[in-house]
Structures are given as structure tokens and as C-alpha cells.
Image (cartoon, rainbow, N blue to C red):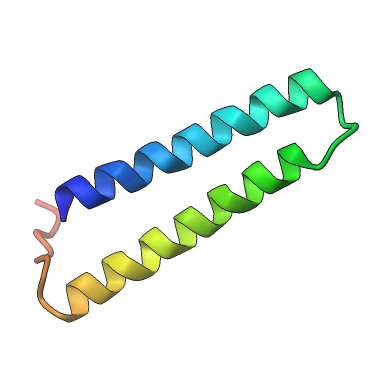
Length: 66
């Protein structure tokens, strides 16, 4: 599960970086920035839902704040 979360975080960061590159390169003339940011939002929501489901089914255990 830790590897999956790390890969998801990498995809989120990569999507943000590509959106920045598209924003600087295209100067607002194309939809590539919007698509990259939409993928980032989709990855983030999917990761959040999967973490909630993993917690619900006991695949991960909360450690609490100490």
C-alpha cells in the first residue's frame, strides 16, 4: 500500500509540473494546462477515496498523533 501511495503522489506532482510547463510554453493558447490540472484533481480524489477504502477494509491501520 505504501508503494501505491508513493506512486500516486508522484503522479500528482508530475501532473502539476506538466501543467506548469504547458502554462509557460503555450501562454494560455491551448487546453493542455487545464487537462493536466484536471488529471491532478482526479488523481488526488482517487487517492483520497482509496485511502478511505483501505482504512475501512483494514488494509491500513491509523497510528494516531502522539
